[in-house]
Every structure is written in C-alpha cells, then in structure tokens.
Image 1 (cartoon, rainbow, N blue to C red):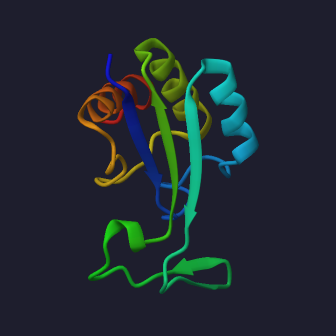
Image 2 (cartoon, rainbow, N blue to C red):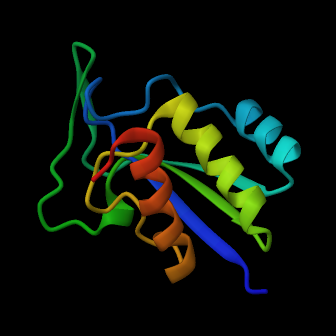
Length: 125
C-alpha cells in the first residue's frame, strides 16, 4: 500500500480562520503516538511579516505559498484507518484549515481523504 501524505496549512488570518488554539508539538506528538502515524510541525514566518498592536500584517502579493506565514502540519502513514483517525482528531482540536491552499503539498490520496474528512468533521464544502 502506498504512503498517504497530507499537509495541513493554517494561515494566521485571525480567529475566524486560524486554528481554534495554538498548535503545539507536544499535542501532535501525543496524537502521532496514539494513532500510529507520523506527524511533524513547521512554523513558517514570512519575510514581510510584522505585528502591530497584536495584529499581524504581511505583504503576500507575488509570494509563493511557502513564503507566507503559516503553521504546517504534515501527517503520513501507510494505514488509511490510522490516517483518518489522526485527521479527525486534528480537525476536532484545531478545526479544518480555511484556505484554498490549505492542503498544498499533499499527495493525491491524502488530498482526497482530507476533503472527505474536512467535510464530515467541519462542514468544509
């Protein structure tokens, strides 16, 4: 069976669009162990990001997705059942990401499963 790879990208777009709570490596490590999947965390800070009075400003025009501030969680496994359980747990804890580019970098199988699970767990469509 082929590996399922999913990248979930949360952009700092405010309380209506970002994760429900800060994403912590310790929480992800616990989920990875519980569901038997690999989960990694990457915090990307954009080159043009600045914070003024608690509000994040960033010029994103002409930038690639990888250059924009975001939290990237990568989930991978060969076991579809474990993958589904891990993604459900992530969506229940943080909510589904709210961007057209939220799954960029996922493989085709991961992308398909993300859309299905986001819709089931968070009314994504």
